[in-house]
Image 1: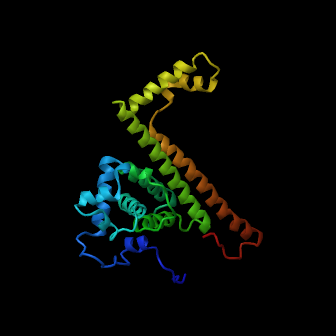
Image 2: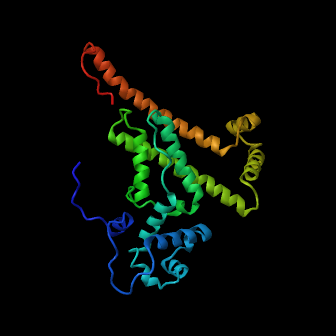
Image 3: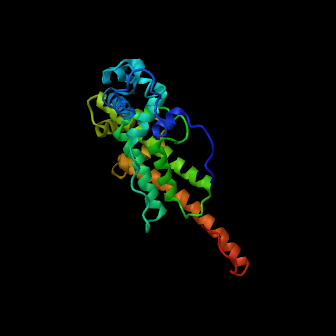
Amino acid sequence: MDKPDVELPESVALAWGLRDRPSRGPKRSLSLDQVVAAGIQIAQGEGLAAVSMSRVASELGVATMSLYRYVPTKHDLLDLMVDTAYGPPPRPRGADEGWRPALARWGEGNVAALRRQPWMRHVPISGPPINPNQVRWLEYGLAALRGTGLRASERIAAIMLVSGYARSWATLTVDIAEGAARTGQTPEEVGLRYWQHLATVTAPGPYPAIHELLAEGDEYDDDTDLEWRFGLGRILDGVAAMIEARAAVPAREAGRSGGDGPSDAG
């Protein structure tokens, strides 16, 4: 693919180190990395709502307006904070590794990143991945599906499905953990109390499916990580079914033609 002749947005060019900020005004005493790191420190310690250009400037001991010499807007700052805090992706698919464990590791890495920096879940997704770590994650996700026979749009859709599930799951479990912390309980204690309350309110009513679930008792494992793996497994089952279907098409065509033609199974 030829390199397109386009003008990158300023924040993207800065993130990739492709453009320096103009040298107008006093000599700059900070770096973009320092500004981003200060924002992350505030978000991690005080929550995303505490992050503002003035708060970051105060943390760095500079005037608020001076920050705009490093990052164009607060929106751009948040995008850079997320890209930095997400960090690099897990190791890529190995030469002798199947696509499924590689993509599972990639999905689990997404969950781990969001749990490590829980404030990130409150930053709206503003567009497709374009900053350095985001692009590395995209590369490794796509690399996990190389040679599977899936079309380009299907490979993109598959990693979007996994990353979307990871974001949703991480958000749910972090929300539950933070809610439990506000009550002085552990998530496990909150979960146990929930089942007790559910049994009480549904006991006299027509809730046969819930009654059946509660009656099974020990067979129901209230393990959020187990539930995560169950959901991820079903997503990967669906991807596997599509890969198998893609492989079956050229095999059938080869059978009809006597097996003389080359296969395009990927």
